[in-house]
Length: 164
Image (cartoon, rainbow, N blue to C red; front, side, top):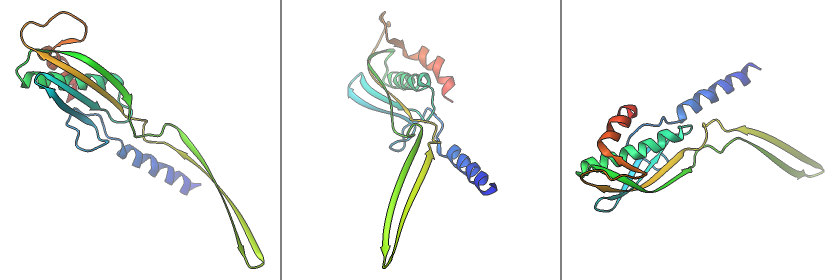
């Protein structure tokens, strides 16, 4: 019984190390945590933020908006409008447990053997990662009224401190 408990504790410790926290940072590796962006044309970007397993959906969406604000300010724009928005669950975490069964047989001269194996595995990764992709159009001057139009400086001041 003691070896089984030790194995379970070791598995939990390793799974805790394997999940990356969701930080506001550039995406360093495929399947990692962070943002990436693609300039479609001047003043128009496609921004993707990938959260770590178990990251709240609102945090992932906020970090995509924060990246849009940073790009707008860096390019000299005052505001941006979200023209398109897609959220999805990405890889990582298989979602639940798995059961597998294996059967084998062999014959050795006058002796025959049959074997049956059953395995039950639990997914300890914390679940799938969330991905938020937005396409933004940037502008200068007074911010127009409407839905999904953000003041880049105000958004940076409000969400920025939460990203540290």
